[in-house]
Length: 337
Image (cartoon, rainbow, N blue to C red):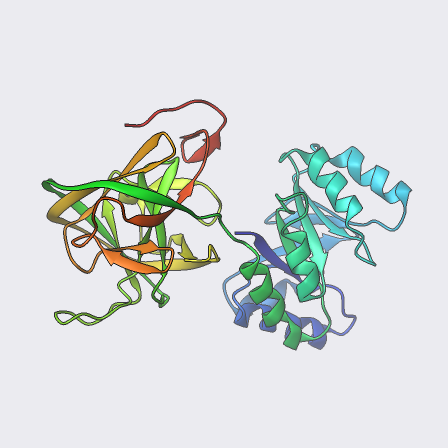
């Protein structure tokens, strides 16, 4: 998921700056660039303020705001890559090439945030050089445009899902199972990426479908055993056992579309478990889930309960090369079996 900030420092009228900030808050933004003296806006809610003092950013982050209008401006920005924490970049007519150069030069050492004023710009910045900028900074004068820009930026943040073939499903001992209850409702085909190996995370569907025994609980994902990995909005993984109320988790749908949701509650309970083994090419992967008919894996065209899962079925998963160290992706050969 890309970070989304907002500029509330541009309009000359304080009332206009305040309206922009309120619009951002109502659309879920929690980090704003403001003018010195506008710290009083903090009374409007709980969020982070970044002060823009003549192009220098202070407060919750440290960095600069820079306008690139010429090759000279780009050269200045390139020279700062790797030397500062954050660079908020505006290109005026929204030329893509400066962003390509900055993404390459920063090599992840300087966070590149792109100022955008339309949905098209938001989508484009998220895909430049495949990686995209680290995030966007909404820079508009009309509060009513904020929601559409955020919606399109989130829709462009996708993960690539791959069908994997189930080889076996077998019962194992009872274990500690984690249910994740979020503050958002999900729909069929939507859930979380979870697995026993960080290189393959299965798309476990939310309990968004009713059956004859229990009502749908679309806010819940019966995620699996405490040891399992879960993919987070920042691209890292965490163990299910580490999650707590207030943490953000990544929701993913069948098409790979993503959005973030906050956890309202995690439940750890001892339940009967089963292990699902699947293959992709020559590689074998597993995930451990509760043995219950309400637990479902997402397939290319629907979903299937783990109780009905059989050899040869295809389910969707996120496959990634390399390994993980403290949840961060590392380029090394790690085999988890």
